[in-house]
Structure formats: structure tokens, C-alpha cells
Length: 260
Length: 368
Image (tube, rainbow over all chains, first blue to last red; front, side, top):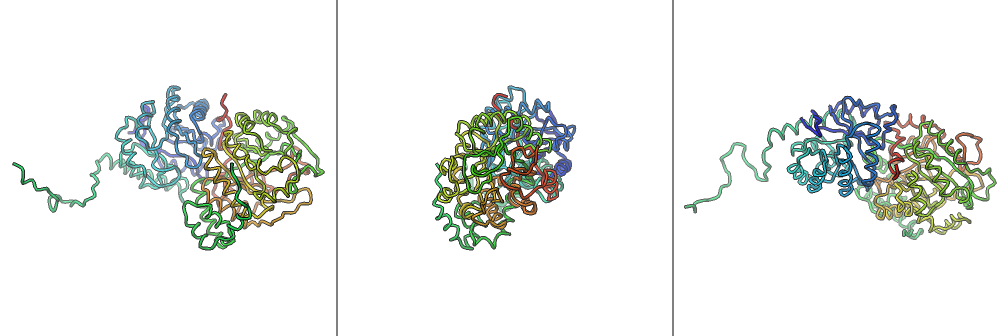
């Protein structure tokens, strides 16, 4: 079981709710993914309105609702969004996104750290979206982040985990769960992140703009499960040289005849 | 500051492109301004369906299966400028009106009740009627009721834009009308608007003031549209480099019949307009592309998902026109008369989500 801030999650797949063709398709995809944590952009929902399309489609009894600060350009905006979200929803969970460049939506490391420090003090459960920077991950963790969410590649690009050597270091060093977020474009990418030892992955675009989002969500669920099982089972070492699956023959060996 | 390249040269650059240049641009993942010129060229016309497919693919990846919706509110048709193409031009004998703050709020609430959450406040240029205090007062009234309030009014100073940002205004649109300096002089006969450079520098002032989004564009039907499109590309490219944390949109107002005797100087066909939209989408994957109700329903329906990201709906272009539609004093007559609900229904039918809310004015108010 994955535990974040004392809450247990059976599923290690988190879903984003943007870019879907309708709230119905979104809800069906979430159901098919069997996920338990969904993130929702506060800019897109009206938390004060019980008739809000997206919120109505999500059964908050079944999912941990993870509001995100999408659109915030600096720490101050993110902090304001977070407080408005908590006031309206009563939930302290927060996916912190501080993205000053509206094109790449890459996270601002300085402002993200500042906002994390403040929001943790204000009692939020903060899951910061961050570049795959191992030192930043450690600092965010020290600031009290409940998990860290390094990106695999720029958001929406479906390029997979291009930052794998850095993500691997983050995973090795972390005391808090590591959720690989952004850029995951295919179930195989998700499986790869999980095989590396990520605690969970967050997927959105790859599902929402798929030909059949519901079927794609189910495919991701299987991939995440397979990747996790493989990681727990213990993956073999990667090697550039071929090695026979029946050991002993033809293996390179050094001549140690000089030994006394 | 941004300097428009020589307009005649832009026209030549566009017309010198070959089919080979077009194919190069279609296959490129990161397009240069030369690629944009190729896509705007006559040589690109046979490739329009291919450009549409690529544009659709990019728009889907970057914006998802969504189309944003908004409506304009005309605050005032007083104007001190004499512009040969505009229904509000100072010389035109039309009924003039400037809404009071209360009337503006009433108009806004009519749109609110129809389901709109993003409104665009529009006015002519008459600083004794519409000034920063007036705009600020309206913004303060509306910011708790709408997700986004943007403006399309006369150019202002950086300081005034910043005041409006703090009051809850999210975005500013200011179109150059034409990037052709000589033509600009011919169609803007008098008034503050006749200063080409002050207008050209306005998007930069808006961005500097901290606004989230800046809209640029040219009025289609005045000058050489291919050169205008390329000039927009140059302007956008310059703005992107300098103001990397600002979002940008481009609008494509195609001339509609207006009060006065003015006929478009250049005919821009639907096919031309589409080429312009697809070319800009391929050039800049993340720029917001806006198609207003100037265009007919058939065209707007057809273009859904192919490149544009934002549509207006249910628009009236006369001040006070939502509460009291007596039909005159409009800036221009619209081509798509359908309501928000009707336009939303078509968007859904096409497999897209009509998005009314994509921000909250309260997120940007420092003293909340």
C-alpha cells in the first residue's frame, strides 16, 4: 500500500482531469483507471457552486480530491489559490504547481520551494510539482512536502520519462513518496517509471486525448500494476554486454595467475 | 521596442516561398519565421487540408478536447478617433451612449445569468467617458462574479494597466489593425489612435504591467493579409522572447459591414482566414487563437478543433444591447447569432467540452 500523509492508497495511478471532451468521459475514465486520487485545476472548477459540472461528476467519497494551483505564476498566487480551495472544499490536500511560463508550464523551483514552506506551516498537505532536480527534491522534503512530483518530460508532450537518471537519484534519496508527473504518454512509460521504483505516477493528457479515453485509462492501470510488481520482484541489473541465461559458459574472465 | 519589418518586404518574403519551402515548414517541429512566411504564401494554398490536419493535431495535444467561450460587453461607443472602417468613428452620426457603472453591471449580470463566466469589456476611445477610474470601478464590481474579465479599450500606460490588474482585470486585447505604417496613416485620419508606434508598443506595456494575457491581431480587409499574418508572427515572436511569463492570443477580426460607407480594401476569403489560423498554430503551438461571432455559424462550426481555442457567443456590439436590443448603434453586425447554449451544444456534438471558466479573478487580487 502507498501511504501519503497517513492516507493509504491501493492504486498507484493518479489521474488529472483536464482536456477531456466532457465530464462524463472524464468520470468514466477515472472509474476505469481504478485510481483513488484525482487532481483538479482550481481555475476550472467553481467550488462554491454545488452544480459545477466537473465536481458533480466526481464522487468525492471514492477519491481523494487533490486540488491543484494550475495557472499560478508565483508563490503568492499559489498560496492564495490554496487558501481559497481549502475554504471552499474543506480539504487540505494540495498539488502545488507554480508555472510562470504559460507555454512550457515548467515548474519554478524558487517559488515552489517558497510556497511549500509557507503552505506546510499553514497546515496543508503539499505535493509539489517539480523539475527532476534531486537537490530540490531534498529541500522540498525538508520543507515538509508530503510527497514530491518530479516531471518525466515537459507536460503534455507524451515523451515519457526522459529525466530518468535524475528521477532515479530522487527515488534513491527520498524519505517521502515520489510520484512521477507530466510527460507520461503511454502505458509503457508508466510501467517504466514504476519499474524504476517510483511510488506512483500521475497521468492526464495521454488518457484525456486518446481515441478511447476509458480503454486507455484501463491500460494505464494494468501498466502501473505490472511496473510495481516488477520493481517489488527485483529487477535484474541492466548490462550492455550479452550474458547467457544459463551462466558459466563464454563469460569474460581475468587471468589472476599472478596471485601468490 | 518592437519594430515592424518593412511591410513591402514582408509581402515579398511571403510571395517568394515555393512548394518546397511549404513542405519543409509542414515537416518541421520547430518553425522559424521563414517557415511561417512559407505557410502564409500562395504556394501553401494547395496544402490547406494538410495544414488543417497538423494544426488540429497540435491544438488537441496542447489544449485538449476543449473550446473556451466568452462574450463581449460594449460599454461605450463615444470615440474621439476618426477611423475610416469603424462604425464608432467620431464623424458617424449614430446614437452615442456610455453605460453608467450600474448599467454595465446590469449588462454583465444578464450575461452571467445566461451562463457566461468570461466577459470582454469593449469601448471606443474617449477618455472623458472611459478612463482608468471608470474601468477600475467596473472591475471591482464584477471580479467576484466572473472567472475572467478582459478589456479591449484604448491603449493605456503601464501604470494604469497595473491598477486594472490589481482590480481584477485578467487580460487586455489591443489590435494593431494594420501593421502597414503607410496604410495605417491613411485609415486613421485623426485622434490619438493615429499614432502607429504608441499602439504598436501597447502589448509590451500590458505585459510589463503583469497582465496574464495579451491579445494582438490585425483587422482583416485593410491590408495585404499575408503580410499582416507574417507581421503578427514577428510581433508575437518578439513578445514571447521578452515577456516569457505572459500568455498571448491572436484574434482575426475580418471586416463586417459597418455604419458609414466603408467597404473592405482587400477581400479576405474564409479559405484565406483559415490559412492564416493554421499557419499561426503551426508556428506557435501554445498561442490562443480567437474566432468571434463576426464569422458565420457554418464557418465557426467547421473550424472547431482545427486550430481556434476560443469563441465568443451570443454577442451584441451595441452599448446596453443585451438589456435593450433596439438594434442600432452597433459597431458591426455579427455573423453568428446563436446563444451560448446553442453554441455549446454544437461544441459538445463535435466531441469537445465548452469551457466557460478557466480562471478566477480572486486568484490575482493581492489584498484578498
